[in-house]
Image 1 (cartoon, rainbow, N blue to C red):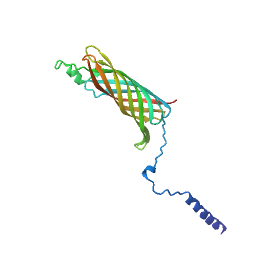
Image 2: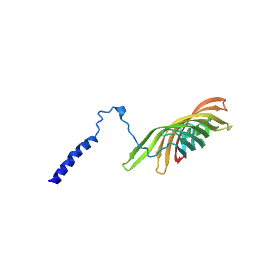
Image 3: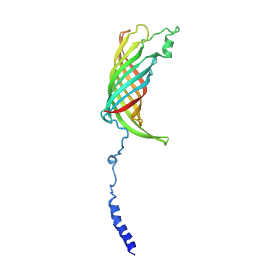
Image 4: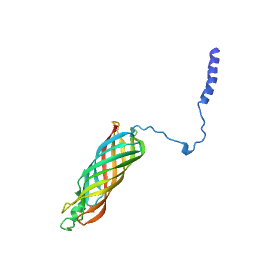
Length: 221
């Protein structure tokens, strides 16, 4: 009998304690709900160095394989400063070769990509993770590079005129973070050039749209 009374007493005293742990917040507005997500791969205060291979595409006359090296510092999770050095060589497309054939004999004033030096900022507004086939969680971010610099190009035929053009670039990229402390980077960027063409003595607007894929290491500062 004493044991039964002890159990009942414990149950009675426990009920108010459980009730006190429940807090009724009422109905929350949408702007009151904040999702807190722990970032598994933080970037703030880290240095990022790496390299990439790519190609400058969408030019009807020239396609340019490209190698690029990058180095930068993350000021926060959303903002970093970065510099890039690129090098490559423009190769004539089928359209370019056809125009230069005996059937047409036309040589447009085309300049091939040789190299570039650019620098600027990258904005990373999105950090996310996704489940890949139910077996692996992939952490990634989406970033927007905005850069300025110069691009060196050379006339593709005749006198090998060299031109160094002021450049402004903007694009979009994705970092896929790796367990080893680095990230696979995929970037599509449009470099816009104001080009002084020496053969014709004209100034032209040109776009070098490049797709690069590479790897960068995130290092402690």
